[in-house]
Length: 303
Image (cartoon, rainbow, N blue to C red; front, side):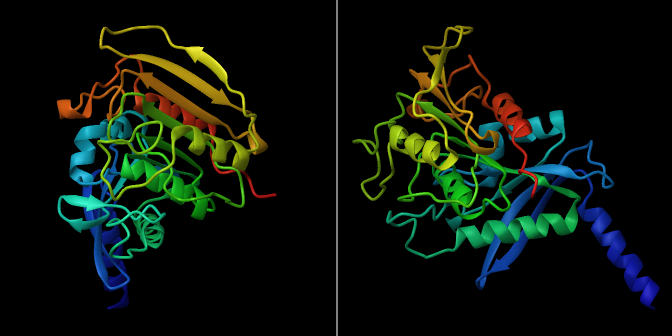
């Protein structure tokens, strides 16, 4: 009978690791928490595979984020495993406890750092994960959560790429440098580059882009003055893009910011589903730049 049980377990695990979408539910701190796991067609169970966490913004969920970001298509193109965790709240209006004192995001005291750690544990039980190449990106409140993960989970998250979301946590002091790639619409009315504005929910407090960059330049040992490059204009979409590179820092880390003049609360290179969010630039594709950045910044080798 033992061999039958073993065979069943192998069969179940094989089914879970089949290419495609898999919805998973975990219990964390007596709460049912779920996430969407996408395994690309190219996945080889014999080969360690990179993982990218894609964190939704407030008021959305994993399914909406798949459509909003186009990251599942990028997963299929280049072969990483895409993981879309859900925050807490009432579906589909989820949010993240990204730290700080902003309510109601902290009202339920959800330990979202612990939850993300549990998600990664679960993913590792299903697929062959390259632990040196686990990354996080996210939109808005999800971008804010990326900064918290970089601070509190630098042992598991190699690098981050927040989009339209600056820091909520007051300070950052991870035990190692964490490379940062940030995208910021300079006309973003929900998460303005100068900090909360008149369109920002009154309960939400977050740091400005300059404050966020300054903190991570200090963490990573990067110079305060960036190398500035204005990207060529490719599309007539009412935007222009400037790249600011701070680095190299400690352990070859860096902080890179794409400032999008005329850009709103959007994912660069993807069509915004709501005009109220502002313009999206098509001079760059965030997904391409994110993946290029992540490829340059695996987890540093342990001495």
